Image 1 (tube, rainbow, N blue to C red):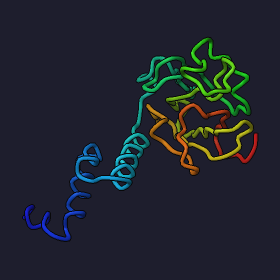
Image 2 (cartoon, one colour):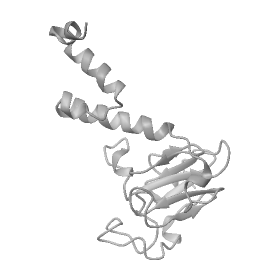
Image 3 (cartoon, helix red, strand yellow):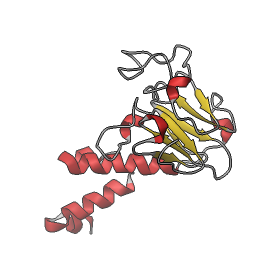
Length: 179
């Protein structure tokens, strides 16, 4: 039956089924170009966004906090927040963020334009919205309670730019058009 599925016009359907079954890990081997990249990225986003964590799973991000890290995989940091914050320039990174290295070009040693991985350990059913601009402006990256993204370079804003090293403000509880 598998050989019949893989023959002729069914190649793409069989490839999509196989890729979905293995979670997108082998997409580039079966497909090429934008389709493979989009499917692999989408699969990673689904896995990351549905991962549930117990607050104790991240010793560096205590319960009741949302945390940002200067490097992927929850390294260097964390910056810890519990409330809405209009400007991450107000928070020192204690040396975790610097340019060139772990932060964007305009970083001044703060958490602004520095975050590469995030964890939401706020509280039950509380969402944090991360923004690429001060005062909660621009797109938002929403993380429900217990969700973590280990590499923001794999997550994209609507303009096509990654979320890596661009977060500048946050809102806790609800989306805001300004803060």
